[in-house]
Amino acid sequence: MTRRIIHSSRVLITGASSGIGRALAIELARQGARLVLNARRLDRLQAVADESQTAGGQVALAVGDVTRADDRAAALAAAERRFGGLDVLVNNAGVSAWGRFEQAAPERLRQIMEVNFFALAEMTRAALPLLARGQNPLVVNIASILGHRGIPLQSEYCASKFAVRGFSEALRAELAKQHIDLLVVSPGSTESEFFDHLIEKAGEMPWRTQPKTPAAVVAQKIVRAIELGRHEIVPSRRGKLLVWLNRLAPRLVDRWMERYG
Ligand SMILES: NC(=O)c1ccc[n+]([C@@H]2O[C@H](COP(=O)([O-])OP(=O)(O)OC[C@H]3O[C@@H](n4cnc5c(N)ncnc54)[C@H](OP(=O)(O)O)[C@@H]3O)[C@@H](O)[C@H]2O)c1
Image 1 (cartoon, helix red, strand yellow):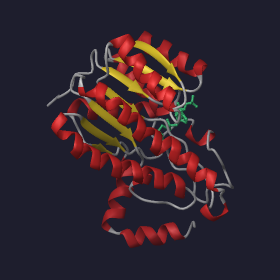
Image 2 (cartoon, protein in one colour):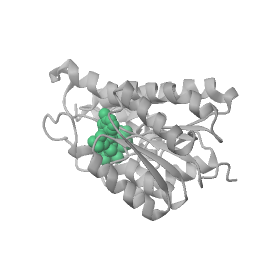
Image 3 (cartoon, protein in one colour):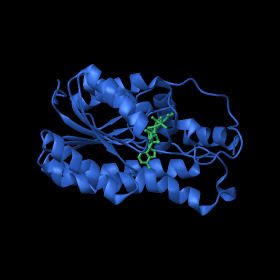
Image 4 (tube, protein in one colour):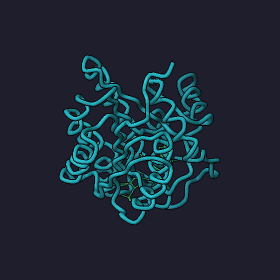
């Protein structure tokens, strides 16, 4: 049964200039959502805004860095100013790095946690008063299958996504009485610019490139989950397989991963 109507919903998406955030903006716009789009690259954000408007959405831009409190506040203020409030917050902005933990500088861990975890948590904190006055309010946190299973050479990223899942599970219970829902999305390998923007790339990944799910398919599944009031989705078959295999036979997956460590 459809629980949430996308049409006219006021949705703030962080990291909307490419990949999953961009695809989600366009998919929501097709259904008549009102969007506030955040990211740092104005030219790319403007292009997504143009596509979203053509698809049927209304758009306000909030150019900025999610790790900056002022920029987070400005994005929320844009939702209030342009659309009179906020119904859905999508914490999507994310970064990663490749390489062995012991060889990385401490800044790599700090930087990844700042974007993937602290900014997501603080954006949520700042948005809650606005969401509490919204229609059928919802927080959507984009985690990863690497928040279900750690893999070598992405230790900082895995830590940040495990943190997102733990935070989300706890917060969902806290928000239930206020009728604010929380959806966690754990994508598997997805077609996007993610791997072009690694903050550090120390060597090549030791495994073969995995087939990737188109960002548009992930976006469609997220929109469906928003409509249905789901709590958690893994929007790819291979991702689901890894999550289940790890749950059923964790030692087997440990041994598989150790080959690449
Ligand atoms: N691609 C995958 O295989 C995969 C798998 C699982 C989970 N995910 C997750 O999906 C989410 C989206 O990633 P994607 O695959 O779509 O990658 P992407 O194409 O690189 O998109 C990342 C987005 O985040 C924005 N961003 C990065 N740092 C930011 C900051 N400090 N402030 C504001 N925006 C920032 C980028 O925009 P600007 O550079 O313009 O700021 C961009 O719009 C991430 O949370 C990622 O961890 C991706």
